[in-house]
Image 1 (cartoon, rainbow, N blue to C red):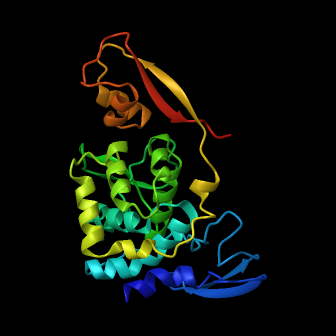
Image 2 (cartoon, rainbow, N blue to C red; image 1 turned 30 degrees about the vertical axis):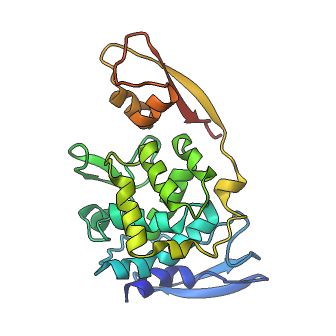
Image 3 (cartoon, rainbow, N blue to C red; image 1 turned 180 degrees about the horizontal axis):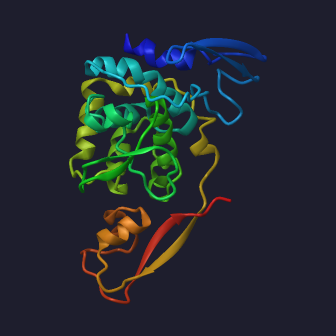
Length: 280
């Protein structure tokens, strides 16, 4: 069963409810090697940073085949809950985005890159990548050896970018505001993106996975981000779209921050863009 295949690499190395240092082993079926993991004392299998351990990256791409929506949910619901505990993103939202962006796990991008959230390369990406037609032909998308890395990257992507910061002010059970906020922040260009997420959540009762997950150790809550305001001076040929691509921020967010009612620009006009402070 697919759930066993995915969770085997996690649960084989996690120490659920451990209270002392322990040693455990699991078999990596891809190369028939036994990996030994030593886990220091942690709460409920999480390390001191609130993260559960990812499986060891063997460098080999693992191809997954999902047969149905139910199988997708069964396979990734627990991973979504782990990410919710660590980062504060509702598991229902993570699962709905995974289902939608990956084409129920069967889309071309998901199959060839294990990218379940449609995250593009963006500036600073140093991992593997592949090209896929999306808004434009041959765009660069992140590629992962295992879907779990895609889930972790999705959490880090949302929690580390200024344009998504306001989402973490919403209640973790308010999936409707999260869905609408993702569209507002520019995660997708589809105007019906929130409705599609909400439909998936309610049809498959994904909100049940938000219940009982403690967020008091969530990274996004525990470590508030610092931001700086930058100003872009409009040059000849600039458009809101080109500016949004340059600063990795949505057109809607630019208009919101600058109280703009139209897409018209004037040469010399100062446009405020908000970016995360550089980390050293």
